[in-house]
Amino acid sequence: ATAPGPEVAFVTGAASGIGLATATRLARAGYRVALVDLDAGKTAAAEADLKALGLNVKGYALNVCDRAAVSRMMDDEGRVDVVVCAAGVYTPRLVDEITEDDFRRTLDVNVIGVFIPAQEGARRMKAGGRIVTVSSRGALGGFGFADYVASKAGVIGLTRAMALELRTRKIAVNSIAPGFTDTPMTRTMPPDQYAKAVSLEPSGGAAQPDDIAVAIEFFASPATRFITGQTLFVDGGKSLG
Ligand code: NAD
Image: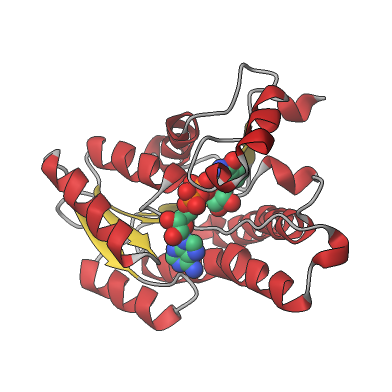
């Protein structure tokens, strides 16, 4: 039996970019949304902005790699229907320059920081649920960010492996692989590099965060519960060639 009240969705990386667009979409669709982000100031601002729109949200400033904090938050909310793992880090560096510490930090946030909320969420999905991970078109490869490429390929593998083990519990696990998207993450690039990246996109520039959020909302919906283990590239066709 499903518990009364709105379904609860946890969105990591919710204070910025794709996570914020997703949280906004899910809250507008009627979910109660837990806004999870490392940055306390940005989390409070996102919470205030969405509450001002009359949406049912609560901010949680925490690190997705901090299992105790993630667990406490989910216990506080009392139910978990959807977990969207959008928190991630990206630091461009050539292979020659990446240190082991750099590499471990990227894997820590981008892979283990997906695993912890997904695992803690799945443990609480008594009547089934949906987990949506955020990979990247970069999972297929890319110049100047090998640690990120490895981490995002890891997210696709993790998504498939979790989907297989959780399918008998009616928990769907799917991934979205965004292409180049206009968010604070890509806006940290020097303007000339940003403009060059945009010019290489085949579909008229960068995706907007909501172009990605619409696909995340699809996988978060109970209507798509029979789709699992899939990765959907949302990249304007760039990965096609
Ligand atoms: P963003 O930097 O705008 O937002 C990411 C958010 O994650 C930030 O608010 C940050 O504070 C938060 N975060 C980082 N580490 C965290 C941690 N340890 N715990 C909790 N929160 C943490 O980035 P974005 O572009 O919106 O990216 C969202 C996701 O989409 C990321 O996983 C990213 O790798 C992926 N992605 C982005 C693009 C792009 O072009 N922007 C393309 C493909 C994939």
